[in-house]
Length: 308
Image 1 (cartoon, rainbow, N blue to C red):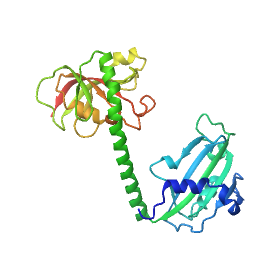
Image 2: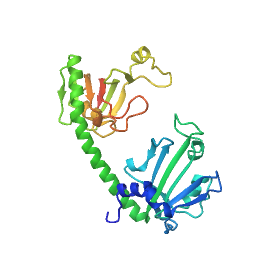
Image 3: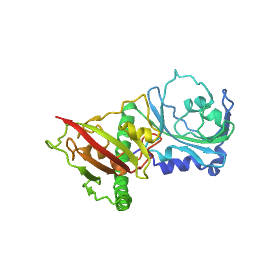
Image 4: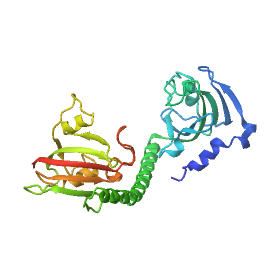
């Protein structure tokens, strides 16, 4: 966008403390008594319903970054609303933001995070905050900006995925060699071993397959299974869940891409091993505590039934 300021410029605006010392002005919030300093004061207050974009850095006392919008695909933003009342000092600072404001302050973690500070930070640890508001947008402009930012992030993610597929293929090939597995590879990067051929018609998109499975990280750590005996053997058994074949409407994007593609290769009665690179699994997000980001997954699967 023509009016979009680069994150590099905003970052310089926020941290350029030394060159703007003559503009410094210190205030104290009524709630929590946070003493904050304006490195630069803005003038334009967003009207009700408008959006104010800002960049935010939260650091430890030793300047280790806890959170930064500069590493996110989208900056921080708030919608102006004069009816909102400040509940704490942080609210006071954010609700009073104007375009062009550059602010820095320090306070105890329990004040910055409202008592919900991330581990291992203690509630009395001193936390540094750098905040810079840089643009006002209407709702329509905000929607367009968001869509453009998400499109750029998707393009970057696709490029990262291409690189990961090449890098992870080396890890998967080593895994196959170590375990004496002869796998086939699809164009997408999925590896699979058909251990038992199924019978009946070929699986087509929309077919419901009933699948027993065991999912492992490539390290061998089991993270889920539908087989109760395996769950018990690995101290994962839960009385609260059913242990039975999972119905999957294949080829419809209802499961991770590696499953969607791999199950399409199987029929009723098939047994197979799917080795799934992370871009075809849970990608950069991971899935809960047991599947970290960028995890290569190994699934043993068995199709017990197929219904068209």
